[in-house]
Length: 167
Ligand code: K1U
Ligand code: ZN
Image 1 (tube, helix red, strand yellow):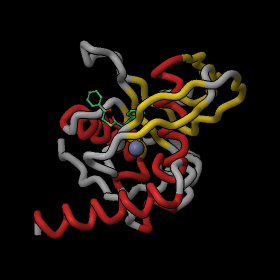
Image 2 (cartoon, rainbow, N blue to C red):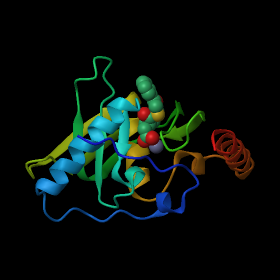
Image 3 (cartoon, protein in one colour):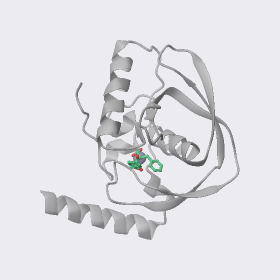
């Protein structure tokens, strides 16, 4: 199965709003499989289709230490949220950058599984953070856009310097 190239911030394609999936067919199942493989290989604990330049509402998440508790969520929607937590976040589209972001502490997310079955997941802690981070990607938002303008400018400069060194 192919590993998918991951877009890097500030690529403008990361700003696109992803479209709902209307039909869970073999193409969507293949996309989900390739995304999971790409996430495990990176390695990461989540990946949104937007990050691999596919603008459909599909995310994969596995926050387990054993790397065997994969969630695939199609058309995920936060239907309830409460509380606040501040957690250090990273992003496969913003390599080497970690910073604290404030998010809801608890979320309830409604989604479709790969069989098209409607499901809900109640999450707190890291899983809640990861769900919010990935759903942000589907809405065209990268975690650094929760930070100050000054921090965003510094991050862009650092990434541009890294890109020059690796070119
Ligand atoms: O969406 C992404 O870019 C994936 C991102 C998810 C995420 C991390 C931390 C907080 C919220 C969301 C990552 O997976 S970054 C890499 C990472 O955090 C990690 C990698 C290996 C093991 C453990 C964590
Ligand atoms: Zn990310």
